[in-house]
Amino acid sequence: MATGDLCTVERRGRVHLITLPGAGEHRLNPALISAIRSAVAAACASPGAGALVMAAEGKFFCNGYDLAWARGDPSGRIAAVRAARRGLVADLLALPMPTVAAVTGHAAAAGCGLALAHDTVVMRASRGFLYMGEVDAGIKIIDYFGELLRQKVPDAATRRDLVMKGEKMTAAEAVRRGIVDLAVDGGVDDVVAAAVTIAEGLAARGWDGEIVAEIRKAAWPELWSKVKDYGCDAPSRPRL
Amino acid sequence: MCTLEQHGNVFVLTLTGDDEHPLGLPLIASLSSAVASAKAAAASAGPGAALVTVAEGRFFSNGLDIGWAGTSRTRLMELADALRPLAADLLALPMPTVAAVTGHASAGGFLLALCHDYRVMRADRGVLYMSEIDIGLPLPSYFVSMFRAKVTAANALRDVLLRGTKLRAAEAKEMGIVDAVCPGPTETVAKAIKLAEQLAARKWDGDVYASIRISIFPEACKSVGIVEESDEEKVKNFASRM
Image 1 (cartoon, rainbow over the protein chains, first blue to last red):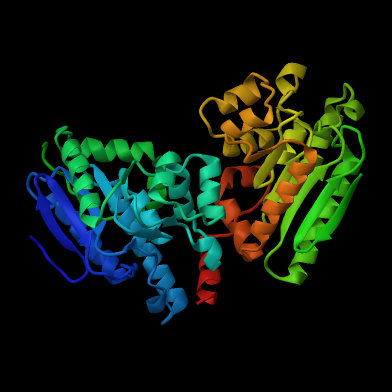
Image 2 (image 1 turned 135 degrees about the horizontal axis):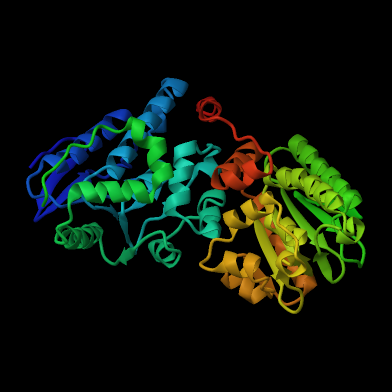
């Protein structure tokens, strides 16, 4: 069981569970993204791991980029964190096992994108929003992120409401509109448990991990083409 | 042919007269000029504006002026080519846009409504109708791009383009093509203006808003000739706000 300040990793059955710990906003900067990417890569090296869950503690799943840190050197740091997140999306797309995001709290901007980059999304019903706050903050959306939104939110009106209107979507609303797969009652632990149960079920299908990765990349080809040069090389893994 | 009024921070563009508002060269030019005026006025006023397009009479618009075009394919193409930059101006407009579909919107008129971000439609009469299949006219490729971008519900594109289904407001809402349905024209205009006011009150930076719209519908925007900013230019914008 690996631990770290920035993200923790544990195994539950066949599920490789990554948690962003603590009560903070889990805002993305290169250090955190690097820790998450290491944790994601560790899933492949974990014998018998058959699915990945990404979760968080506290009120926030991930509240977007670490803008306070970015202010230190705006153009350099924005570019750096964006490149890092692009790499994380590439790693998730190329991961040789199914992925589940446990949106345990608010998921805003880049944090919302992180959740959507998973195959399945479960979300806490009682609190927390999906919020694409860029329009309110005056931030433009770059190419691959637009592609991620188009591929994962195919309904035009829903995408418009989420991104052009900055609507704060509850889990129930997000499920109704097809963005989130399941709204889970209760607290953070309940959401994580539900995500782990789904992930365990997916792992039990015994899919060949390389095939999972190939099919996923083929299902979202435009997105894959825009991020693939930023990912680490996917390690080959034996059949489950 | 059309008027532009400002009500607070909402620009109301009205297609005037009780006719079908056919999109001939004069009306297209008039609309383009009005849209440009709204854009200029908003630029000097600062963030927080919105545009509502309404029409008088029983028609929103019945599309390209095929009466003027007659049997001339050249003329028809001329009209399609003239409408394309107007579509581009609307898709690049640095403020939210609402179409109050106060009457029939067919062919290019349906496209015009689709070029707006939101659609409010009257329930009591009027249909959205892509008549080209019934009349035997090909669709300009940018028309198809717009419909592919915005009409995403299962089978909706097929129904609208390939079957020439005439959509009343309720059905259009179910298909995700219309956002709100109102009893009659007065309520439709009022609701559209209210929606525009709510959107304007968010005080979005117009340049950012337009950029986000383009990133949400890139193929449609490209098809009308909009050139999207590069990621580098967008990053400069982000950095400058820090």
